Image (cartoon, rainbow, N blue to C red; front, side, top):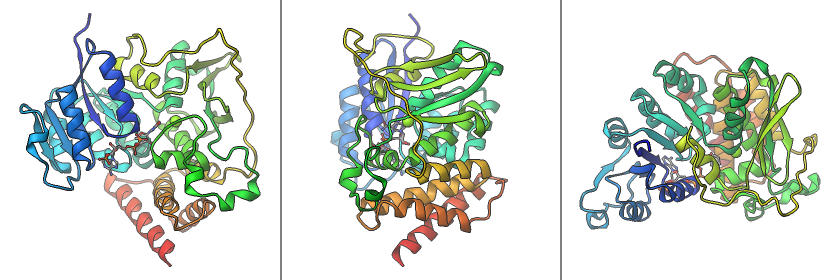
Length: 384
Ligand code: NDP
Ligand code: MG
């Protein structure tokens, strides 16, 4: 049996983080948690550190002076972004699971890549913001990025079946989100509570709203472009309401390969953490003694403007995807806070993209500037 893999978990308190802990708990002989990091929730993070006897704990933004007694005696606490990044660089680890939300995961991820650690990547925002910089760095350092986002993890698995030159297209499946069957003329009045009721998946609030608008699928198209180095026209989306087929690869000969499992993120997380090994899962696989319906249908024109905007951003390239992502993030926050309506989200993204001068960024700082400029502008235009 191979040595246990040492895992650093960024975003330990979140939805992916919690599922990752289930996977790690299931495989104590293969996986060892060496560090857990969250944004600000000390009590929750300390509880994880106690349960898993984790030697390193970090918070990007500690809200209260942490109570030392809450941590195991042997545990080192890392407070603030710089300390957490230094810890990621210095602690011995094999794989970093990037499951913290938002683009602030960028610098820690680049730090982990520079140290040659395998990246299990759940966070999609950093690829949308700076995909070229992240994938260039991974290539330079010979680092493998194994996707955790279920669609991309499925594609990663299906790509093992043939030569890359034989691929015709990648087909991402989409559940269609909370409003897939709601008449389009009723979308203007939907509430955050309704949008948060995802039919298949239990996820964090931001990504659940993104599923309802399909901005999430848009982000995933951009994510796929970088992870698999494919041209945008080779990326398709199909509605698959059951969320059992997580995505597909079509080869030139017409064969289509798919990855199937029940809608639990534990499958993709475990695959990414153990790759290329396989082991018993946390959740039972599909039960084929019962009838399982699998449906696929094309996207309905006009229902998902955010997806169309993402396609435009992808085609424009350069800083445009950073604008799309930043505008969407601020708009979703405002929608969740009850300050704007559901259909304002695509309108805000549209306006942000129209005002932005798209360019190929020469440096990471340039992309980060575009991001903060877009955020500021959207926040101000919502207040007005
Ligand atoms: P959650 O909101 O449930 O959890 C977010 C985690 O990240 C928490 O640990 C939180 O810490 C931390 N965090 C939040 N904001 C920041 C920040 N600004 N800087 C550093 N850490 C932060 O999110 P999810 O688990 O749903 O998603 C995590 C990532 O995975 C996202 O990028 C998402 O797009 C991606 N993803 C999620 C899927 C899912 O099924 N949930 C599926 C595919 C991808 P704290 O608790 O202290 O606030
Ligand atoms: Mg996904």
